[in-house]
Image (tube, rainbow, N blue to C red; front, top):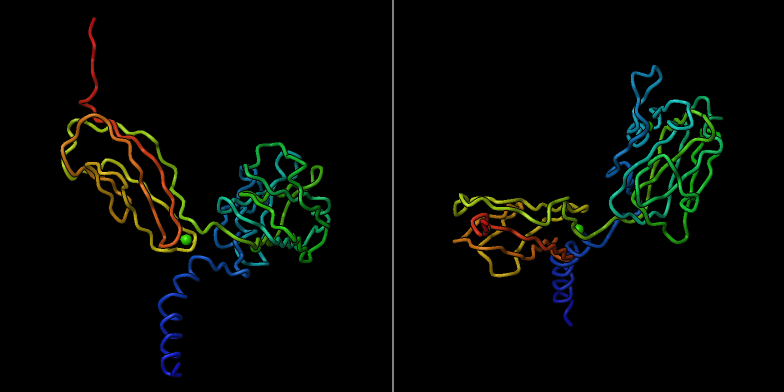
Amino acid sequence: MPLTLLADMLFYYSSAILPSILSQTHIASNVDIAHKFGIATQSINDGYAYYSPPDKAIDGNDSTFNHTRGTDTQNWWQVELPNTTKISKIMVLGRNSNTWRLSGAGVYISDTPYDGTLDESDKVATLLGNAQKQIIEFSRPETGTYLIIKARNSYTLHMATVEVYGQIPTKPIFEEHKDEYLISGATANGEVVTTLKALDHQDDTLSYTIIENVPFSIDAGGNIRVTGPLSGQYSFTVQVTDGVHIKRVQITLFYELACIFISH
Ligand SMILES: [Ca+2]
Ligand SMILES: [Ca+2]
């Protein structure tokens, strides 16, 4: 093969195909998932003098820290990760003051948010009371959506930084929505009846399709519109794709005029 042809092919593959494949499958192992995607929460704080909000532990700044109250029901912190995340490494850096308070704190990975109780089978580590980087690594990733840290006894929980590394979902995920919708008899042709939006953690461009032949269309924003005369009910599949991965949901639309009223 002539070298120029080979070079052209390499250029073609590298410029046209590889970037799109990489954007779908490659997840940089050095991305701190907690900082980039996490939503941190802790016990309710009501004007407590030493209060510092939960997101200070995932703000990418080692000199700021969260701060809970020091009671055994309020000394917890958690970060919600993309559902679900395969966690391969966690780093916890304690606050550079009152370091002993981190001693004995438990680290848990859970599918559900903290509700006042902890499943000891979810526990993956016990922390030391210091202000050094404590690294927890898993040879086989631990899967979960919540990383929960609970201080020991009634110790106050404060941490400068919590980092999470691993893999997040590559498939688009539909945001929370209803399965069934009632459409008013006054709905006009072209009117939006509902919106089904999906999110993609790689920020890939999403496109939506309705699979069945029904009098509805869906646009790039997930808006479902009436495209023809309606009668009865319609169950159909809405598909979203990021170009590689496909996610589908089934919804049902009831047309109000189809209701049959029986009088006795
Ligand atoms: Ca911080
Ligand atoms: Ca994606």
